[in-house]
Length: 147
Image (cartoon, rainbow, N blue to C red; front, side, top):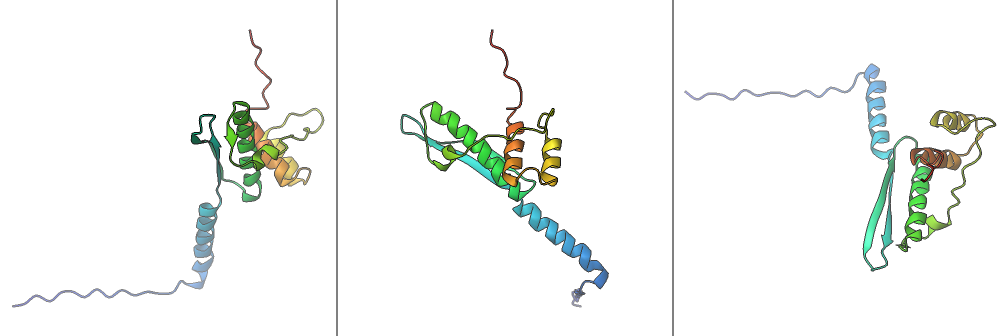
């Protein structure tokens, strides 16, 4: 007596109309999550001719602002590397003006203040990205006195 294999029949049903928003929302969030990351690194050549990479940075919250934060970090690193005698491959970084706009009267820049000023249209995407990177690098701290 031969045993018969059980046949499993798969049924594919289309999404019910009430499931579309949830499915579309998940798909949209997945796409944004996968594409919402801006990365950069500094490529340079040492005085001995070695090709090196450094200053890896990544921002992942708002692509229109992230690119400016990445540029700020890389430009800051590039200027430091140039001062140490290295050749910077992306010369554009050396041309960037890293000036941070003054904070509103009587205040110091913070992530919250920068976000509020950006939302109110008081600073541009570039300025907001630069301020975020400036704060993340700890450049808002007063210099430590040397003994």
